[in-house]
Length: 497
Ligand code: SAJ
Image (tube, rainbow, N blue to C red; front, side):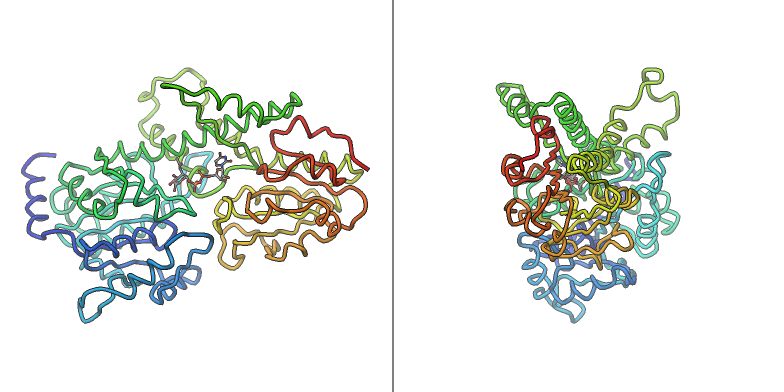
């Protein structure tokens, strides 16, 4: 980028002055906390939350403008902060609220900075084809209405090369302006996690990657005011894209490594958690053994796809760009395969336990506990419970689903006919097998004797623990057939009559 160009952009930013009005496109798990934190920062005057008024998500506009959070599940401080920023602010255009949620994208013209927090799922992971339709629609809105001197920031997790490539092209095409000369462009990936959305934005360091240093500096001006403990980490846009996709790929890899170890422990007839305590005990200078937790699978909107964004980033460079062992498999993609296998492993454990109880999958009544992909959250995106549910149904079982948080009306990925209920007793009644997919706190205090009565009191119901929340000895003593991820020491137990 030649100096004249960036100097022009610097002049435009200087003429505009400090960032005062911000637009956040996409009122979801990333956009809502980001928007209300911007709105609560004294540095900024006004924040627009842009949301399509569609049948599936238009309700969010009305809830947010009424000061309510559309995100259920335990989200500390979020509800209060939404009520606060919808209630206060200095008079601008006759309106005093500091945060407004709207589907009127023409308001982008008023914004000094616009961020995009839109889902970037994969249409077909196998061929590394992402579905950028919602993101492209959002970028087109920005290009259509933005004015010279605007800063545009992509917060969504994207394939490395997207900011300087596709995003820049669409913005320039729609606006007739030039990136790095007439407007700033950067990638500042979100690092939120349900259950601590505000905390992660304020306390995690913020990666800020501009297409040039002028854009990076302007983006630092945007994020600085919302950070409490976190620091700004400036870098290039592509380095920021790789940072984000890599940190989730590494987490997925760590989970795959521990799932593989748990499967090995089952095969060897030993207790994975003894091994984990042992491996985790190796402490000391420079020794980090970040051994995570095995489980029923990896869900969510992040780990299930960010590996593919990273893979696609390299693939797009062409076959000669990467020096790689011939026929060498990608460690990252193998990790995806292992983690995607865990719901099938849960099915195999359920099948073998039912067999031990003298029953088959066909005709079995299964109580599936926990549809969300994370404990104590309502987030069911790409839940590992779904492939298990489909496979059990296909095997002839009747599956009833319990979840204290997930709202079947609004949750994605809820298969037709799967009525998710909050009535635990109804789901456990006459169940042949209780299968735990999420570690919600309600399941940590289940009493075997009480569950046995609900299951019909006679015979040997099955319990399959996919999140290490059930004490095997208590359930086995209670006459259950027990199976647990990583519990090779218990999975072959004799039945207690
Ligand atoms: N899981 C395990 N074992 C573990 C940890 C998690 O099986 O030891 C499973 C969980 O049950 C869940 C899935 O993995 O199904 C994902 O869990 P998560 O704790 O990674 O939750 P996410 O996906 O919401 O959050 C991740 C985080 N990424 C990293 O920590 C590198 C978060 O910081 C990111 O902001 C988030 O992805 C995102 O939005 O990218």
